[in-house]
Image 1 (cartoon, rainbow, N blue to C red):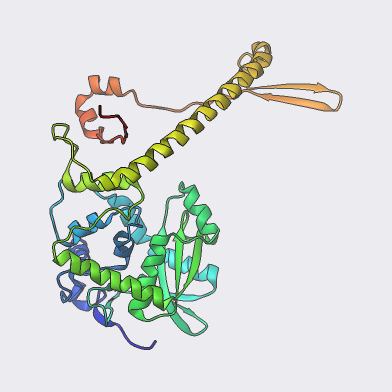
Image 2: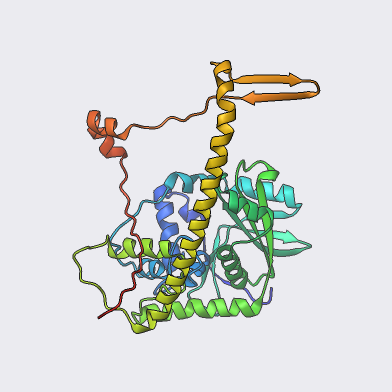
Length: 368
């Protein structure tokens, strides 16, 4: 390493040992705002914040980050999944050990918080460090649901999500290290075939741009400039962000007059909608054809079902050919919400979780 980061403190310091779990969690959250020693003002930017600044986070927008860092009150507060969060924390050490077994590398957890010596608001809480050929690099551990099939396939193909790449590039810059390993567990953390890892090589030019953009974000926030959401490509995430901060939709407000420069966007939207309609019509025709063939298929099977009665399998043998007809019952349990509401209204109120979806629809009309 050419230079050392500025150490802000160690979460494993004896002075924190007497703190309760709640107090320790509060200390950790506060450290993400101002650093463990409280020296980072007006607020700190962490590795997980970088993707939000660039509009690449699947969870938060630049607007969420702006309001959160400035400690602004949100119109709506959504509860985090504390159970999943806690499970992730508890499995961190296990995932790291499994990573070591699978990769053949040595790694250890980290409890030290550090700040970049040249970019005063950039603070890193690194999960750990890994040793490769005598050199030390960053270790970052992640977990995902075993139902996240697309994510798991990407991890197996070693396709690192951009939001994690930005995070570890930030960490490499703070700690002045030349590589990082990002490990993800999607099942049993003890099994090596249920984790994947990806190595990231340092890019100092890209890293410099990241830190400069992080510092610029802080500067713009201090000027009171609210960040734009134009970099966020996920319209659903934008809608959720706006609802979180400004509240639910108000049908009594007058229409907002939009800038003429948005006409190009609207024209592209209409083009997209034409293509979507065209494809849907083609799919509809295909589905109709499929249904016709399914009906024909069932017409051949219908007279045979009477012979099966309550049996779940039928067998036909003719010379060397053998046909097996499976007719096993399938089904699922569901809750009758109408009955629940009528007979157990108190329980219904407790378990009913309302949600708000706002449908985007663009109309084009002629003004006569």
